[in-house]
Length: 212
Image 1 (cartoon, rainbow, N blue to C red):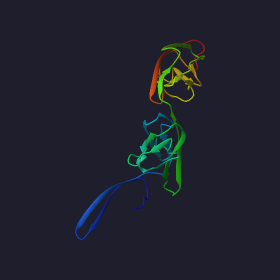
Image 2: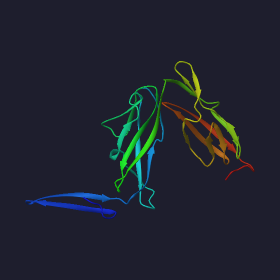
Image 3: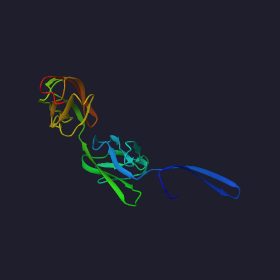
Image 4: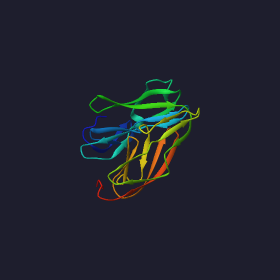
């Protein structure tokens, strides 16, 4: 089958009195490919699920999951291996750093490849922050480093290697190990590193420093 224009169609085949029909979706040209998550940090034997999304057409914002249509490869299977049965599933096999690649054949015949950095670290004892609550003024920043403590007792500042979730990004942001107050209010911020997470409640007090 060859797609001619974007839309939906039903294709019917007849042979010796027998009929078969299939429904076909033809999408516009892909405008953007994205992968989630953009980076992966794991401890040995842990797994992560990567997903690739396509945005079609010049105006659409809908993300279509094309994970199963991608070809997945590992840069170093001694660090991280891709599952041969579940598309996008990655298993940490040994300490180190590598890349997972997801390749997708575009409609014009070219191949688009996404590279996802993967870091496999020692087992983690805890993830620590300066406090469970923080107060920052709008328009100002507050140093708020996140430290990982490994099972052997060693520690490391991982402020720039975290997955950060913020309940309200209009109130506070997290950048380079610091909380940045935007406008008055309260937000919950969660820091995740490998299989550990820790949360804090951040209160931003207003004033002339409001950024928005």
